[in-house]
Amino acid sequence: MLETVRPEFRKASIVVRKDCPAGLQMESYPSAIDQIILNLLQNAKIHAFAGRKSGTISVRAFKLSEKTICIEVADDGVGIPEEFRERIFEPFWSTRWNSGGSGLGLSVVANVVNRVLMGEITVNSVLDEGTTFRIVVPITASQASIATDVQYNAD
Image (cartoon, rainbow, N blue to C red; front, side, top):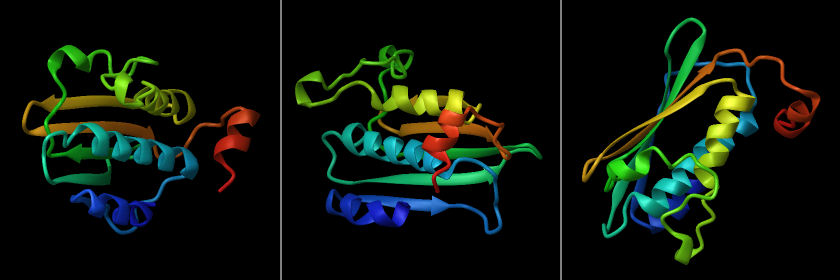
């Protein structure tokens, strides 16, 4: 999935890096994980580098424990102002209402992480240094509803 978005990001002078150890495996919903990463990448492309000519986004995955995997999407962008951080996962909340933003991207990410993958998402951000979204999910996804299976297990 990262290879498919690289050309688009390259045009915007954004380098996308991947750090994932060989052999890292999980039994989960690949489409849900793709959706999370893609939404976080697009969100960074739109927000993280405002007023900058270039930047870097790193996607890293690693085994956190015997039962969990951590996925981090980090950028070296402008950061998220502190007063916005507690609201970024709220549905329909956006700083870009006048620029076509719907305020749903990070809300969807949080819902998929929490309700489909039964994981947790946190954010750490420092102004003028960047933002890191950290997702911790079970290595083996719990049984989901039939509707979830149909939507996210089509791969």
